[in-house]
Image 1: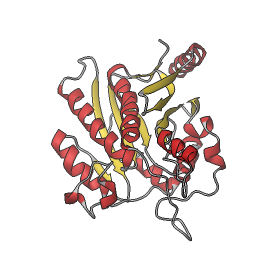
Image 2: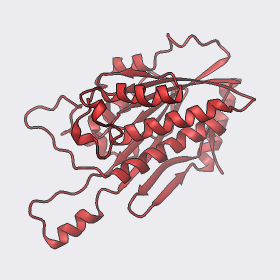
Image 3: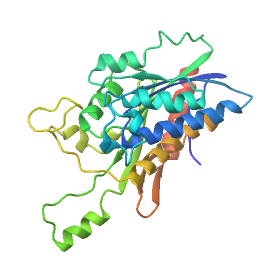
Image 4: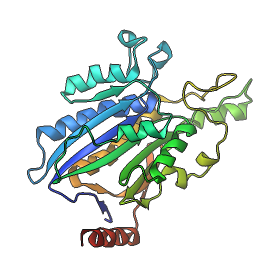
Length: 293
């Protein structure tokens, strides 16, 4: 199996930033914290691993969130990231920060991945990992700009995108069938930037329509009429979250990235990985070797 190995030093600090705490984000966060808790209870002896985790979202919990997100009446009106930290980070004993803002600027992204507060020594490898669990292309466009800028040299950007349920006014029988089969698809794309060079193209290069979307706004900043997002399905959120966690599991236990993207359908329990080619791995390993020398 071809794989990109990210480990270079005996001590590794994963700097994890999770942007989005809704349908995908709440399920991802809970499973991520459980995974890390289990990992820390019995870590590999040959490597010291630490974590710096930040959840970012300015959304507050509403009643409409209860049926497919991990919130209940006790969370009503609270910031989603605060509720997730209080419930799951505290339960699993994991230090986790909550930032109650939307990501709307390069300065904010830079501050989220600043290493000034990490207090790491030269023998510690910092691995920045951004999980994009948002439902708008404006935020993806901003993360793309950050990914391709000189503001960060190394970054793993894992993006989870899902389709919404199709909506029709007074649907015909044919349209009703379309509704029945819609809202189950999605994809996880892993972009990887190493030493300022793109090794794996991010979601915005894989699906170029994201960058062409001019009718998208940051959360809370739409003008005029409110933008109505198509409803999402619980099982699609859960599958997207689980597949995103798969990438983290591989990073923790083998320090590897095996697939560039995963397309899935939650209705039929199907997923298809696009694995990393041998040519990409060989070019990456040659680059790492030349960097060390």
